[in-house]
Length: 351
Image 1 (cartoon, rainbow, N blue to C red):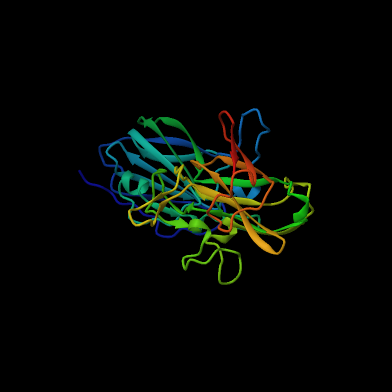
Image 2: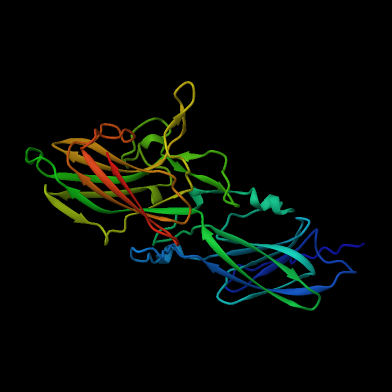
């Protein structure tokens, strides 16, 4: 059985221009062909819970490129199609039979994809997922299966989900004893951030950013040139907010958005020598009170992909001297509201 290798060698990087590559599992002289009419839908960070729906922001839905992979039932790659337009259905001419189709939006440049396992095991990095209103994108992916018949057309829909979760500080309530006076909040950061992930959603190679609120050299992150956060655009926010005591600060209009990959950790784990193994992701609010910096880390256990977490913090006493140490009980309390497509969940945490 003779296999034809077809390759469009040149693909121009212009809007609405696409290229298609056929490989190993591609059509043979004895096989029929059919068409897959593929619709790709980027999923918004939305919820049907009782709390208000979350509308995905423009930078969270930005699409710059789309890679479509069609695999045979044997797992071999049949077709790789690249485009930057998903506003209408994409027709794909393929051989007949059962197919597994993957859509990867804003993904890394991948080489050597021969089998579906190669794609699933490919690693994406948070360093490449730093979308902000001024630029950048988030990787999204999804898959589906369909059966293609000779001269037939098989409709296939794929919902592509983001790999990141969104964390946001939405309210701070300052209720300190009168003797402490006003508070300045210099910055807020996301710590213990999982920074790599497989394309099939599986665990990556164990890369963490901002472990315990520190740089790789061990300095406490504070945004200065020698103590910057990793993936700073999505894990650090310079706030510099001065707040009087007995004041509630509503942050719904503040563009304070943080992003990180799936982190299933629910408690701190170390090895036999006390070295970091894993910790839950934490949103850490730094506060300057009476000339001294205190930290209010809010633990988010089991941070999950494509969900949105809204944090409301109440400060009633001095925080911790360390961004990874929970303050004494009663010094602060936090409510974490989790929003997704199913039921909303509320985590109440006294810290």
